Length: 69
View 1 (cartoon, rainbow, N blue to C red):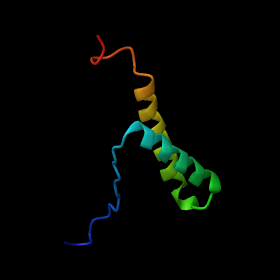
View 2 (cartoon, one colour; view 1 turned 180 degrees about the horizontal axis):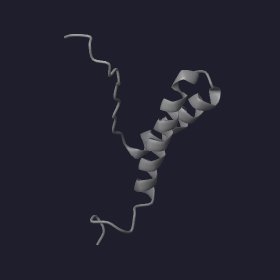
View 3 (cartoon, rainbow, N blue to C red; view 1 turned 180 degrees about the vertical axis):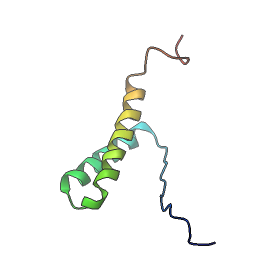
């Protein structure tokens, strides 16, 4: 394995029940507000967006799209 690859992106795609998603979102909110990890602020913001969007889709399912009658 050569280290010539410039892309050092890591991925963390995790699935969980909605109640755990809400708890994780609370934790991420607290972490961001604490400003204890400024280098992770963009990552935490992205997590907030992903989690809140996913939770919203479950709690307020869209009334359009192929999955609706």
